[in-house]
Amino acid sequence: NRFSLTENKATYKIGFYKPLDKFPSKQFSLTKTSKKVDEYTTREDNLSLCNEGETVDIECDMDRNYNDRYIVYSSTYEEIGELPSSAETFINENEYKKITGIINNIDTDESGKTKVKVTIYLLK
Image 1 (cartoon, rainbow, N blue to C red):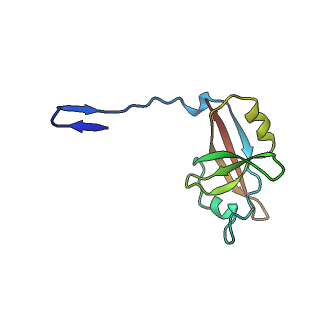
Image 2 (cartoon, rainbow, N blue to C red):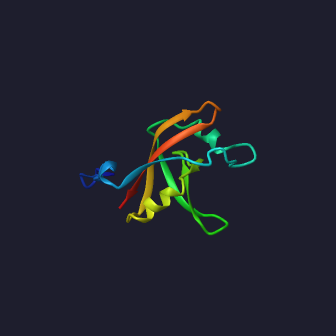
Image 3 (tube, rainbow, N blue to C red):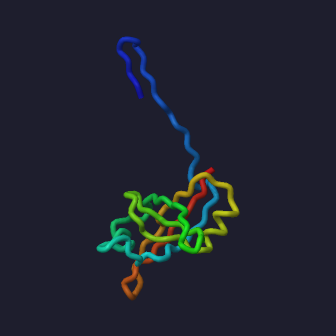
């Protein structure tokens, strides 16, 4: 956005976006949420700061055995878990430029472990 008094002119940038429900999507339960991020923090600690409806980022990372794994990050870019291996098939069957997601459900089971469901969207 720009405004110029000398030119008596205002310029605005406008973006048009497609609703997420127009893109290929699928819901997955996060895995490896209890994994340590550093000496003091686990992914589950980071999850405790998340809310249902929050947008998350997903990035592909290669493990030591050269297998793709999809790490899920909160809106504050903290690791909160991984997508299960079944997500790789869904992701590879679709053309996409970016993967994003929304936290659908956060719950705690009887043992106190946090369970999270995320819908991922493959953006074109």
